[in-house]
Image (cartoon, rainbow, N blue to C red; front, side, top):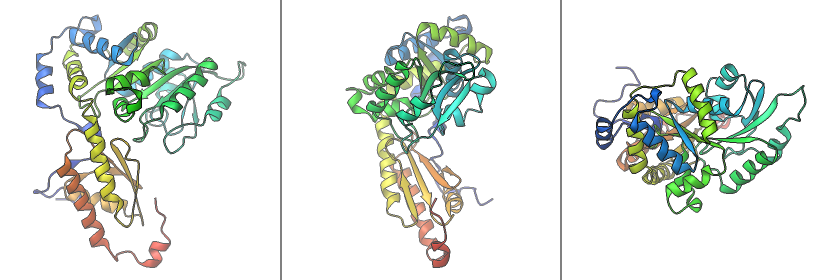
Length: 368
C-alpha cells in the first residue's frame, strides 16, 4: 500500500470534480429503455428529443448533441468564425486555457485573451479596446466568448447584459461556455421563477450556448450546442469532421434527458453542501477559503502544505485536486456525511501538524 491508498475502512468521498458522478439507477433504467436509431442519419428518436428539449429550454432554434463540452465549444467557435478571425476570451477561460488550443490549431482562429477579475469577468473597457478595426493588418474580431459559472462564480445578469450588448454594438457574435450552465441558473434566482426559466433568461443574451450534461447533472457523457438553425447546420458539418458523429447515441441522450427532468433543481443541494464545506474549513488556522457560491470551493493552504494535506485526505478516503491551492467540488454522489468526513480529516491533519512549522518558517512562507 502506498501513501495515497485509502485506508480499507475509510469511505471514498470524491470531491475532485462533478465529472466523476455515476448514473443513478433511474438514469440507467432510462438509458436501457431508450428507443434508438442512427444519429448520423438523423433518425435516433432519443437524440432528436433531447436536442428539441434543450433548444426549447435555452430558447434557441436548434441544438446538436456532442460527445464532449470541448468539442461543443470548438464547433461553436468554428461555426462563428473563419480562418484568420479572432475571438475575445478570458485569460483563464476554459476555451482558451484548457482545450488544447483547438480553436487555433484546428480552426485557425486567433484567441485574444484578456485579464479576468475574481469572478471571471473581463472589464468592458478591455473588451472594447481589444476589438480590432477593419484593417488588413489585423485578425478580424468576430466573437466574444464568456463562461458561466467560472470557478464556481455565477456571472451577474447585469454583466451578461452589458458585455453582450457591447459585442452586438460592435458587430460581434456571442458564445457562452456553459459547462456548469444550470449551476449558474440555480444560483441566479432573479433570472426566473424556476431553474429552467433562469436558464432561458441567461441563454437569451447569447447567440450560442454550450450546455454540459456530464457534470452536475450527472449524465455519463455529453454536451449540447444550442443556437440558430444556420449555426447548428454549420456545427453539424464540423462535428462530423471532428469525429463527433455517434450512431446509436440515444442511450447517452436518454441519460441527459433524464437529468433535465430530475437533476436540475437538485443542484441547490450541491451548492448547500459546498457552503457547508466552506464554513467548516473557514475556521481552520492555515487555510484561506475562496468561492463557494455554487458547487466549487477553493482553498489556499499556508506554508506549502497543500500536497501533504491532499495526501492525508486521500489516505482517509477523501479525494480532491490541486497543486498550490486545493479544489473541492460537490455533486450528486456526495452527501452531508461525506462533507463532514472531509472536514474531520482536514481538522485532524492540522491538529497533528500543529507546531510542525517553526515561527521563522511560517513568517517567510507565502500563503497561496
